[in-house]
Amino acid sequence: MFDLEYLLPRPLRVLTVLQHRRMSRGLSQEDLAAELGVSRQTISSIENRRTVPSVHLALAIAIALGGTVEELFPAGELSPSAANATRARPGRT
Image 1 (cartoon, rainbow, N blue to C red):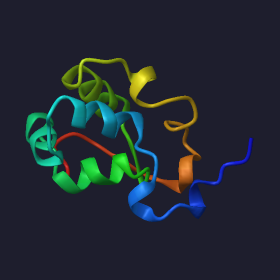
Image 2: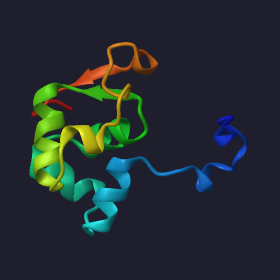
Image 3: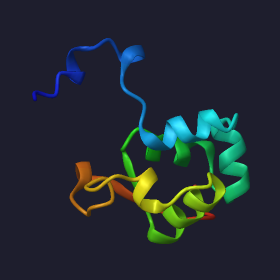
């Protein structure tokens, strides 16, 4: 299969597992960020795969959303080479 997601208009982009889980629980990015002690921008960056969360933050997100790290961050999304992303840590913005 070919990944043709880049051809879709931005609003039709497939949601990440993290975004879907957060939305299905009725949480905004602000709500989740406040619960975790990070900024809304950090949550946005993680959801849009611009930032790779630290292991500690990934675990905190999984606990907050009632899932596992493996469910919320499928294989490859937490690898060091994932889009040359920066690392987000709890308590930092």
